[in-house]
Image 1 (tube, rainbow, N blue to C red):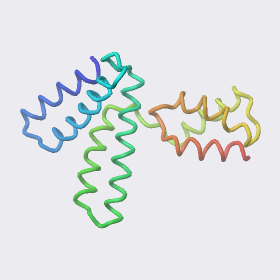
Image 2 (cartoon, helix red, strand yellow; image 1 turned 90 degrees about the horizontal axis):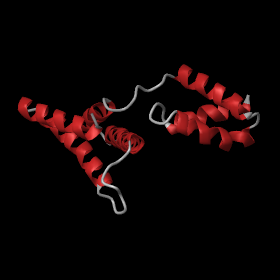
Image 3 (cartoon, rainbow, N blue to C red; image 1 turned 60 degrees about the vertical axis):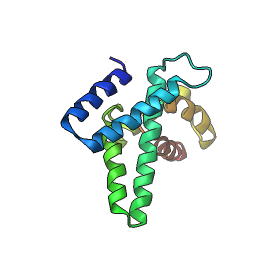
Length: 150
């Protein structure tokens, strides 16, 4: 079952349950998928990797928006963004813990033969592909810097 089919099924369930908040979040995800599928030069179908990138981007946007709303004292808007983030997160792969990320990065560093902070580009190229959707790029970058500096 593709992500789009899964979202369609959950939209129907949310409609039957009259769950407006979940319905709004699911429709937002479906909208992103439809836009990606109908992009100029697109084939009409998107790959699993492209779906993962869309969901990751949407999750990051929701998290940043929620943080901004909390800073501005708009708790009700932050709560709405957090709910949408929770719905999006259901379709993302399980996020790795810091220990798991560090373990993965150590093996990547060893496999590419990186030794100094100047080798960060080599490590990041492999790491971002290997950990796509499983860890935030910012966390990966910070951890690679720390590991290469030591």
